[in-house]
Length: 368
Ligand SMILES: [Zn+2]
Image 1 (cartoon, rainbow, N blue to C red):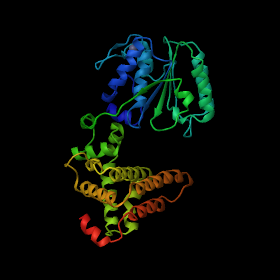
Image 2: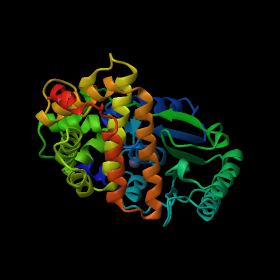
Image 3: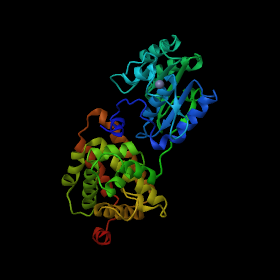
Image 4: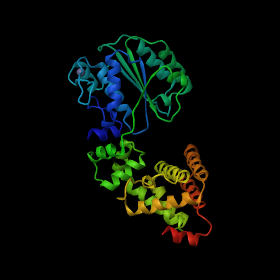
């Protein structure tokens, strides 16, 4: 399995180097470390699909390695050969702890207490200890308060790396005790270049569609390509278009969404509502970026959908799309109650249909 695929699958890789778009953040981290200005806790923020965990594991490797070497893109990196690096590669380094949510969606207080005990003990084999918290937005309130204690009473030889899914809330008291480090999204060109080098069978147009649907996050785009979700997404888009034109009944229209699955369908519907809202707010918004393409090189279904969003945006005020976005958020929450996914998705499609102007015949003619 290629490294990128392993990262996308959440597998631990030590010392394979950081990802291309992480170079600036990596150099900042190395510069702080070299000048002894690295705070004992770092809050690493980035959207999903940017490889935060991988970055943190690379940083942990560097911090534990006994003879770091020069990194190609600048700064230092773990050597991969010393005793510390071997222990890390075997997944059994006693001076590294990683906190992830246990059997639920949150990190609990007992986990943080055990981490606190780890922090005050002396390192066993390395010069320091490293703790990764994945992630700070998954701490429940008690766990967050327990972690504050560790943050407020820094221990000399421990480095905390807190990950943060950008946009999710983190207690301000935690945030203020950490040095902030962000991973910036790569440019569209850089993202496309990286995706083209990865293992998948997709063509250029699909790669572009995947990256746009992933909102520029390369690892999310790679997952879409590997799961065959780009073609399935195109089918959904075409189905919505035919439904709006009155050429498909709602029962038939919802089928590709049900087949795709609730989560990815809600992602798509949310993205489309957001894109249409932007178009409604600002007519100069580049409609080419909407619906998954950045130039005229798009799949025909995508081009037709792009016209459809532009048409809806022209005929509706932006707040209608805000309501649609809100409906998607509500639908995500409702999943907890096991609501029938087909009914939920049908409701959302009907809300899209309500955005069509009344004089449908004249309208569909113009949409052709
Ligand atoms: Zn080493």
